[in-house]
Length: 204
Image 1 (cartoon, one colour):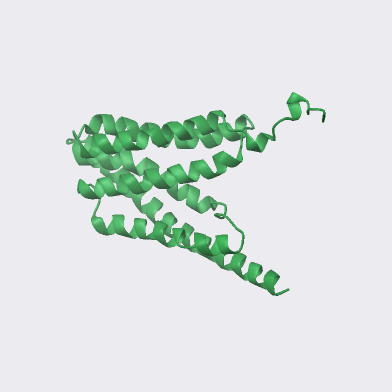
Image 2 (cartoon, rainbow, N blue to C red; image 1 turned 45 degrees about the vertical axis):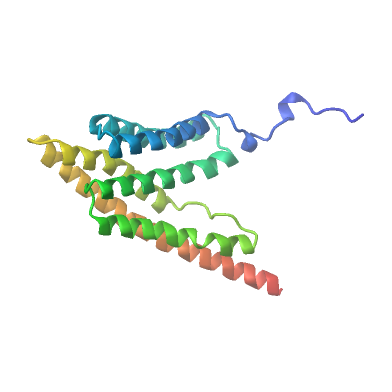
């Protein structure tokens, strides 16, 4: 019978599943259908605003806690950007349906993600998974997550609060959209370099 490994060596830290950042990512995932229902069902925009704000805060918090608590994991590296993409796309669609955002803005940002998604089969063909998210992409996502509550607030609130919220909404949406597209260009450049190196290695 083979001796069992000591409990302290039983699991690589990168393979941990139950960590604080992963729990926060799962809570954000659960909040996506809730925010969609609030926006598209009963139009409880005040509650939707609160959920969107909490989702944005927890997105910042789980990355911060992963570094602070040394709880980075392989699951978290996949789960966090996947939840970000799902949250961003679903909210963009809901805002398009509600006429909170013009459809051309929604179409441009969603097309960007579809283009990046189309690179996955090519990467997998050469043994690669999704490439690491560039810091520009992370900054873009953060700007859009901050933009969503302000967009909803500007849509619903009148008086002096509305124009102030509109100014923040336009700023964060503009910065986020520009960075979102620039991040996509950088990601496609990374994909091209990765595939070129893989083809050269195959020929060698």
